[in-house]
Length: 156
Image (cartoon, rainbow, N blue to C red):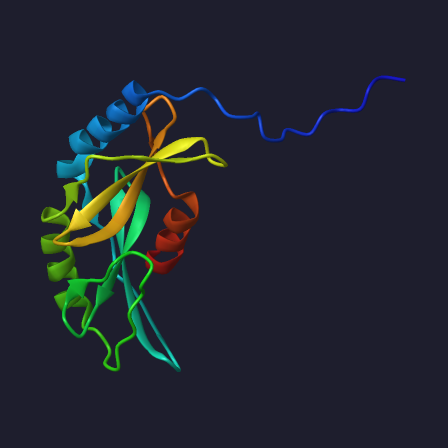
């Protein structure tokens, strides 16, 4: 009887280096001018209105930026604001493009073990608002496929 077919699981940690982290940061710096704001994901519920701005690169979503529609500014990552008033999609769209144009890459990278990739933070003003994931060798952008599908379902 042949041995059972293996199920792919974690392969363990690849070795990482400062050079790869620095390459990942540089990769994000290179794509920063090419990032765009995707269509606003506007949702209402019993606790108020919530707006997310997908950060897009070559048709793929990389992360979402929470927009506080009361102030029309991004909210820090981890704090999705709720607003009592519905957002006007055309106003949100214009503001979202401004915000994306004001993003900057922070000079650091976080390593995410389960995904085997670097997460390079993006800041707007004093807030960390998004992460761009980059392969462990620092050369390839890793999209958020779940968010990409959400954007496609929402828009199309």
